[in-house]
Each structure stands twice: as structure tokens, then as C-alpha cells.
Amino acid sequence: MSFFERVRARAIAIDSLLCVGLDPHINDLESPTAASAESYCINLIQKTSEFAVMFKPNSAFFEAFGADGIRALENVIKAIPKDILVLLDAKRGDISTTASAYAVSAFEKLQAHAITLAPYMGSDSIYPFVSVKENGCFVLCKTSNQSASDFQTLSVSSTELMYECVARKCDVWNVNDNVGVVVGATDCEALVRVRTITPTIWVLAPGIGAQGGNLEEAVLAGTCAQGLGLLLPISRGIAHAEDPKAAAKSFRDAINVARRKKVANSNRATSKLTCKTHSIAFIRMALQCGVLKFGDFKLKSGRYSPYFFNTGLFRTGNALAQLGRFYAHTIHASGLEFDVLFGPAYKGITLVASVAIAYSQLYGIDIPYVYNRKEVKDHGEGGILVGADIRQENNRVLIVDDVITAGTAIKEALLTLKCVDAKLVGVCIALDRQEKVSPTDSQSAVSKVQDDLGVPVLSIARLDDLVAYLSEKKGDKLQLEQIQTYHSEFGVDNTLNR
Image (tube, rainbow, N blue to C red; front, side, top):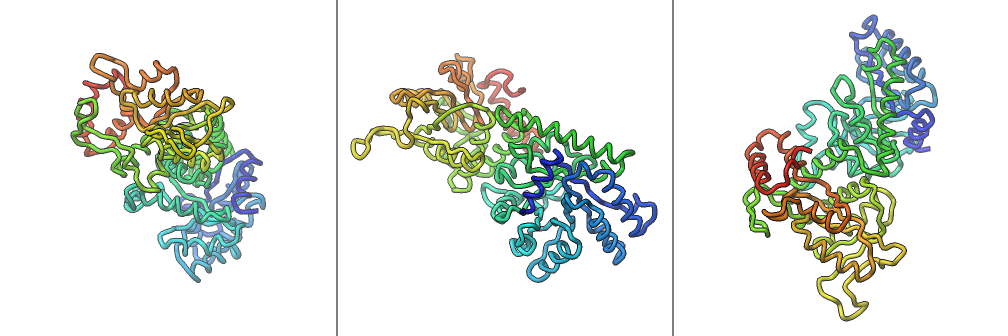
């Protein structure tokens, strides 16, 4: 079995995602000795084993006692029941023969099953630990410490932050099902973004409790649709409890409540919290790509807007792939049932293709798609539609477009689809501007399409998500004020306060 096959088996067998941290801080010990550290950890193991998928001894606290500490660490690992995984928290980060020596130490001498690693030196610092599929690792990706943003949130391209690049690399390195990532539970937006990039990779999410991470939010953001893929390490919250066994059970049960909610939501709309976090992540990516800009822009309507949104500027393979995943997540989370995706020419062509690819990658569902030509083709196969055949038995169509300004493009698409007896069941757009159709019409463009066509309109993000993003960021007060002023004149009432 691969390392994560064992993790999955244990998690399912005991219905838990709890990882118990073994951190023998010297102030918590009866005496400042290795022997005391050993008895402290063994006591925790005995009291919490039935709830633990994994134990995570922190190597540093044992190394601080020298040779006696290493012997104590060996004894602690030996005391862990054989069906429970051991993650050595050592954060190694070297290469070549040095990395190989660290691997021998962790897996052969100490008999741990996995280790935490730092990826700064690239794949050379990872492969020596995962060449054997039974051995695993969790790679530092977006950590929970305050200075994590010194490097981890730097932009490495117009579309990607450093930690996102690490997550993508880990997905590539995970050929033996034994590479996971560390993403702090204190940053649910990062959990969402990593889960979007790597839908099935296992995530270790420290930071619950003393560091301020919210357990339910972390579980909703970090688990995969099946309620797995996430381990929450708890150390002080259990060790400092009056009854460590009861505390471990309480954490396990709280995690499971959130897991059940996540699984229940996998076939219908996700929680408001998860949707909001996902929308903010999309806003951030749109800004990084220059798709969303601030300034003074004249719109088709003649209005002057303090912001402009143009999906045509998602113009690299990586950017389009991320966009497709955001669309796919929004559609899948809605629970809307459909048979075919349709992309109105021209922008809708690349959009619908990217969404179909993302749907296959994220959910294993092979969705057919079709798009139209602007001009009827009078040679070859002819016709105005290109792609999947729309038949009576699979004629439920979901339109994928960028924005809705007046609904004209959607209505034109509907006329095209009616020619092949297609049934429109919904529309998904990237951004809902939440604006009135005209000065004399109090409805938003999206609401008008919903009412006129009788179908739901989904959106990855709305204007109020942009407002929420700017409200949380310091230094963007002028942009925020300009958007709020614009919305007070052209927006639908009360939409910025949902």
C-alpha cells in the first residue's frame, strides 16, 4: 500500500481526520529530561490512540536533549500502535546524499512513516524521501506562522503566488500517492486555492486552537468532496486538556460534524462561508492577471465605471486552466443538473472548453460541450454549432459566459439553441456586476435574465465580493469609496450587504 492508501484506510476505519501532535515542551514536563519527554508523549499516545489517524512527534523537542532525546524519540515511536501512522515533524530541506541520509534516519532508524519537508531546493529535496511509495511526506506550502508571507505569497507569475506554485509542483511529484502539503488552518482562502489546484492531494492543516484557526471553516475549505484529504494536527488543545482522551474525542467529533456538512454540500450549494472564500480567491486571481482593473472606464452602456472586468485577459494556459476550475467549482457546488455546456462565440469558446476540462479533472465527469460560429459554415459539416450533438435525451444546456450586461448575448444564444430543441437550464458567469439594466429599470441584468428565461444564473463572484476584498485590504480606501459611490448610483439596492 502507498502511504496515503494507509492514511485513507485508517481515516475510514476510525471515522477520523485527527492527527495528534506530540510536542514535549520543556515547560510541560515534570522534569527537564528526555525520560520525562518520553513518558509525557507515551501518556498522550495511550489516551488518544483510538481517535488518531496519525501521531506527529516534533523532532526538535527530542533533539534538544541530545543522544538521550533521540533514544526517547525512538521509544515514543515504538509505543505507537502499528496501525497508526507516524509523521516525523522535522522539516528537512537538503539534497543529494544529505537528503538520502535524512531519509534513512527517518524511515529506517526511527521507523516513522512520513516526514515534513521544506521545498526551497526543489524536487531534489523531495525525491529521496518518496522514492519508496510506502514512505510519505508533507511539503511546506502555506504555513500558519505570521512571517509566512515573507516568501510564500510572493507573485511568481501574473496568475500564481509562490505557495500555489508549490502546491502545483507537489501534485506533479505525487506519482506514488505519497506527497502531501502543509497549509495552515489559519488561512482558509489558501486552503480553497490549494484545493482548487490539487483537488485530491492530502493536506496537513496546523493552526487550530492556540494559533486561531477555525475548525469548521478549515474542514469546509480543505477537505475534498468525499470528506477526506485533510488532517488536522492538534497538540496543545489535547495535551493541556484536563482529560486528553475526552479532548481528542471532542476534536474528532467536531471535525466529523464539519465533514458531514461538506459531504452533504458536495451535491448541492456549498456553505456561504466556502462560497465567499472561493469568490475572494477568484477576485484575487483576476487582479493578479490584470483581468480586473481599477481606473475610469467607459462601458457599452455609456456609463463610466471605476473598475473593468475582461476575461479575454486570461490569456495563458495556466490562467485559463485556473479560470476553468473556478467555473467548474461554482457549477458543481450549485447542484444544477445539465447535459451539455454551451459557450457563445467568441469569448465563450475558450471558457466552455476550459470548464469541460476542469470538470473532468476535478470531478471525473466527462461533460460534452458545444459552441456556435458567428457565421454559418456552408462547406464541410456546415451549420452554426460546433462540438457535441444535442439530442432529445441529453438536451439540458448550461450556458457559460463572462458577464451579463443587458442579457442580449444570452437571449441570442437561446435562439440558436432552440433550433436544435435544446432546453436551457441555467447560465454561469464569472462576475455579477449587480447593476441596474437601465436608469428606468430597478432590476439587475442577472435578475432580469433569471425572470425572463426562468433559469438560475450562477456567478463565481459578485460585486459585493470585490467590496469585501477591498474592505479587508489596507491602502485601497479610495478604490473602495469609488466603487461604493458608483454602486449607489447604478447598483441594485442592498446588494452589497448580503
